[in-house]
Amino acid sequence: MTSLRLQPALRLLAHLAPARAVTVYQGELPPRHEWAWAEPPLPAALASPVPRRFALAVDVIDHATVEALLPAAYPGDIPEIARELLGQIASMLADGGDLARVTVAAEPGGPALDELHLASRDHDGGTRILSLTAPATAESDPVRALADAAEVLGEYVWLNNNERLEVTVRCEDHGLAAVTDAAFRTWWPTSQTAAGLLTGLWDEEPGIELLDDGTLAAFAASFTEDNLANARGGAWAAELIGDYDIDDDPQPRFPGDRLVELLSAELFERAAALAGSPGLVHGLGLPEAGEEPEYGVIAAVVFTGPGRVVTLAISAGV
Image (cartoon, rainbow, N blue to C red; front, side, top):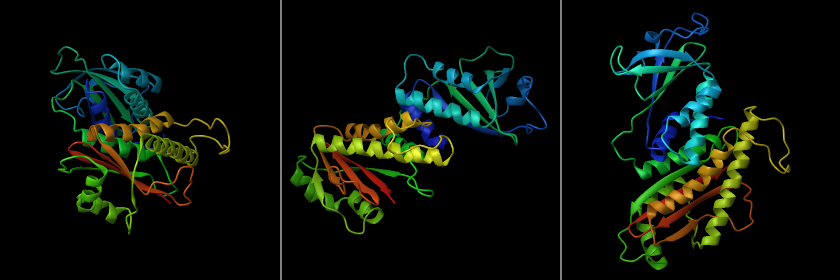
């Protein structure tokens, strides 16, 4: 795993698998050299980072146990992206060092709650507790979920030593009486989205292309392939995989590769669903079929539905 920002990952997880609310609490414990977890810590030692909960028992566990406990905390099946996210979160917790499961009650000495609390302590004593509890009542924001999916993807896709893939999500109501190519082209230059893209991506906006299903599918496939290649290079630079030849077939696996593949496709699927149907899709700055831009891709894919426009602004230039 190259990296994973927890907050967008947890928000996306809550959207994909709403049967559990997911929260991370930060705390401090004595560092490892002062207090080794050769034996399970006393419950009281891990109670404070979890608000309104009282520790009943603490069990020292390993990475494999965390990987098994996280998906098992959900009733029924969860989407594959959620399972992959949980696997990456498990690896992130294990990177901290010491791992423990904390069984809690709502009151001192009360019955154990149907919740999962996993503590991860690093060498210096910094502690995170990941809590899976009853679901929140508030509905997830689909625009926020799409933006979070884009942010999580960008955490894995390194373009070079300093820059990562950035996909910006914009959503805007259009007020068009009918969704046609001509109506869109008239509205687009007046939109806030177009103004933002001109400032953020291009000095001069490229032409607008109406995309058919085949063209969109080809670009989405190319986007996924490029992301996998760049993420694999990032994993190699982080010494997560060994040396390889870019002409090898198949290419080597790397931590998070399936998540990169799923999220790359998910962006287009979610954007289309969020815009709604029937609708149109336009592209700006998309490379020609079979073209491999020397300096990467700076492009936008615009999904226009009955009431709104959802744009994926892709910044993958080097």
